[in-house]
Amino acid sequence: MMKLSENSDYLEYMRAYANGNYEAACLALNKCLNNPNAEVYDKAFFLQCLGEISFREKNERQSIEYFQLAETVDSESLLPQYMFAKFLAHKLERYMDAIRKCDDILQAVTKSPHPKVDEDFDSDYYTAKANELKAFCEERLIVTRQESHKMGRA
Image 1 (cartoon, rainbow, N blue to C red):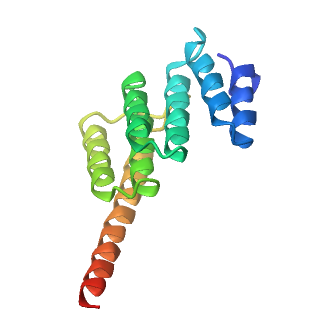
Image 2: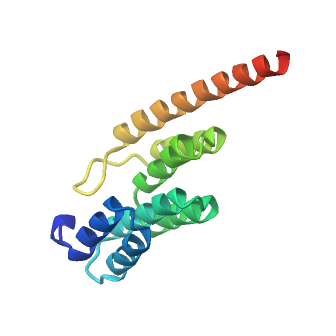
């Protein structure tokens, strides 16, 4: 198992991303994805990074596709689902979609609890994080409705 800090393509991605060179960052991430030694969870992470770049380049549709693909690539873990929910909430402000994703996580944890393993968290972690994010989204929806209501009266 190769650490990301030992992966020259990943290090190139980090340099390019830090310098705002998103084209070079995407090329480096695609090399990371095509590396036959890359672990499934690393590939999901690389796809999420591509999603973040797409978001920065104002391509919402493509960013969502990358996060969805990350879920597919690492379907055994709930981490890609949680990261997608976080992205929906904090970046896209799509709170209802994030709440639905959190509900899916909570349902999966209830249906099939799992212990912590080296490359993933346990059910308790996902339950806590999904509930925390869901509460944040519900609060944002209340605030947004209140602001909309105030603007309607102005």
